Length: 193
Figure 1: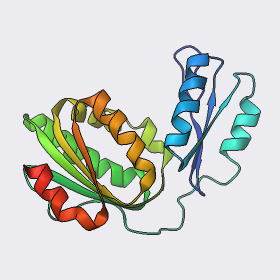
Figure 2: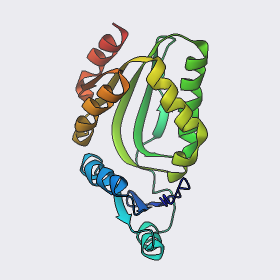
Figure 3: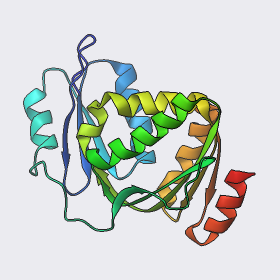
């Protein structure tokens, strides 16, 4: 990501996982990346000086930008979803088309007004299409959900997510609770309560 002034560009790849090169001379961004990197081990973020664009591009593009071989079903809405709770599954790689379906459904609920709840079953996370980060509806969905979502149950055995939940709840005000995959029925009961 090139953060000279207000112009930011991301240089990213999504093959072995996701790598993001950030071009900046701003110390607060460097510190933020250093703090965030250990919390999100599936994304390799590195900061390069504003004059190191060639090195940053080489890092972010050392593998061709492509969708990895599908392992899992991707991102999709669960049949158990209803008007009260939006349930979705992430199993593998998340592409921009799949994220658009989820974003559309969240935005629809936001536009209807009132609070809603969500349950995410994260079976595995194998990276995402970096184009998601440039999609306006993705950020509109995220910021809208912060205002209108009341409860968020996350059902997963992925241990790296746990440190992010406390921070996410503190920043957003959403009541977030983590459940193991074997506890999905309890998660549904909690999110509906």
